[in-house]
Structure formats: structure tokens, C-alpha cells
Length: 147
Image 1 (cartoon, helix red, strand yellow):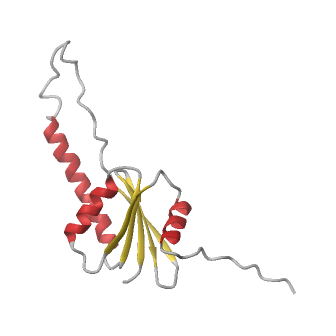
Image 2: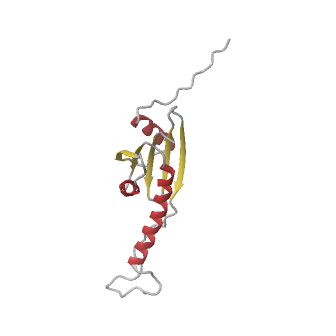
């Protein structure tokens, strides 16, 4: 498959807009299923210790979080296989992390054109941004004239 794709991504999920050579688009949603990275709970150091057997150690939680993110990023990378040009954008660190993984994955011919910061967006806004980036106008619906 050749074409262009845009990926809006954060740690909760990704929206992939694939543009085919004939300027049609498809939108794919990938949920991360990553559990929220929680802070350690329990008493403060002034009031006493938290129970080590009840709470997993911070390094264990960090490894679990990273493992879940790796599965998510692998799913996004699999969806991008075969695209010539890719735009990455989103609100947080996920776009940069995905860019690093894409560089390491060495997907033949895939070129990340830009990595941009963007807020939360609706699907139509994401599609419009990807189309604008690649210089494609949105298809216009023409009304049929009544005889």
C-alpha cells in the first residue's frame, strides 16, 4: 500500500487517518488499554510507611506501564506499514515516543514528515488537519440540479 497517513496519538489511544492516492480517507481508532499511571498511595512519610505487600513497588508499576505502552505502539506501527509519508501529532509525549519507535522499526520507505503538538481534536478536525498537511482539499459534495 502506498499513500499518506496522519496519526493523532496520546497515551489513551490513536486515530489514524489513511489517505489513498485517489484522496479518499479511512479512519482507524486504536485504544491503548494502558492503565493510568498512578502515584503511590498510603501514608505520607511523616505519618508512617505504606504497606509494601499491598502496593507494588514503583519500578514494577513503571515496567508494567512501559510494557502496556509497547503493545499499544506496536499496534499503531502495524497499522502504518506500507505508507510512504506519515504525520504524527497529539497533545503529549506519545507522539515523540512513537516517532522514536518508528525510527528504530525501520519500516522500509516510511518517512515521518512532521511531529507536531495538537490539542484534543474531533475525528473531522483530525481528517482536516491531515488533508491540509498533505495539500489535499476536502471533497466537496455537489448537489444535483432538479430538472
